[in-house]
Amino acid sequence: MNKLNRQYEIIKSLETENGAFYASASSDYSKVWLRDSMYIALAYIDKTCNTFERAIQAHLDYFRQYEWKLDIHLKQKPHAWFEFMHIRYSAHDMKEIEDQEWAHVQLDAYSSFLWAIGMGVKKGKKMLRDEKDKEIIQKLVWYLNTLEYWRLEESGAWEEQRELRLSSLGACVAALEIISDIVFVPAELIARGFEALYSLFPNETPTRKVDLFQLTLIYPYNILPRPMAQLIIHNVEKELLKDKAVLRYCGDSYFSTLEKEHGRNHPKEFFYGSEAQWVFGLSFLALSHMTMGNLEKGKYYIERTEKLILDDGNIPELYFAGDYRDEYGNNYNENNPLCWSVSMHIQAVEMYEKLNKKQLT
Image 1 (cartoon, one colour):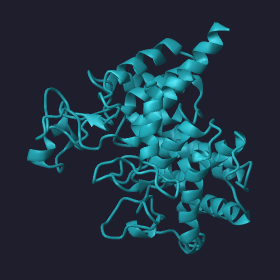
Image 2 (cartoon, helix red, strand yellow):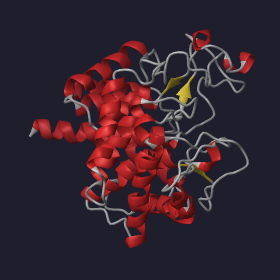
Image 3 (cartoon, rainbow, N blue to C red):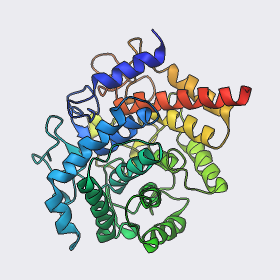
Image 4 (cartoon, helix red, strand yellow):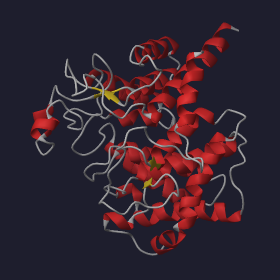
């Protein structure tokens, strides 16, 4: 079987009845995340099937269910975590999960959704069904305005402590720019985001210099001038690229080899050298290099990813540092396959094939 066909089979096996995607087959991740679904759906944005449209519509239906919350936040800023529009839902009915506190303050997740809609429209996708869908999109723009996203401390892609984040600012301005072809976006709303982004650059947050998710400002958003994009790639490769894959950031405690014994409540320096290495980081590096025109580097990172794919075609979320193995003897974690990882690998391979073919003609 063609390797990519197997990858597509894995994604389809994690598609829910309503068109969204389970984050993983694992028990911890058997839910729907807004961000994950958008990055997964990108593998289908140039395909003739309706997979991309179904994913967008599934999440539009969530926002339609909870439009009353959006209406509240057109007038007043939320404060408690649960008040924010949620980014994680039950898979069968796209309802908010209320049995635990969760870091729903994630600007990049909301923005990935708006950006995907805008890009889908540019690609000719017919995902918007009626005026109500457009109303929801407009209200999400006003939601970002109410939140004052350009100065909001939020949890970002890794769902952790709230800080102002470069990657989230970039996602917001990219989303607002592309969605302005569909609904009204004040120019000032975009300008404020760019001003905050350039003020924070090159740091991810006031307390963190380099972060894997900064690569999203190159792919898929492609919003930075070339020198800034090159600096991000350089910093990620210098600080975060390791022997297996890529750290999220230095001192990351999540699935650190020290986490089980010591917990996560320690200074980040405690975890240096023990951090987990994320597989999709290699795909983001491949896609970022190819976006910048470096085809050979893209191929290099694709080949590194392929060495980490399991015999059954699954791609885990991450590999442990060093020789560490879990109680099952695995050197990767239980979030396997991570649907997001599978999709990013597909996107990298297909971009390489497209660009290589163009180069040869």
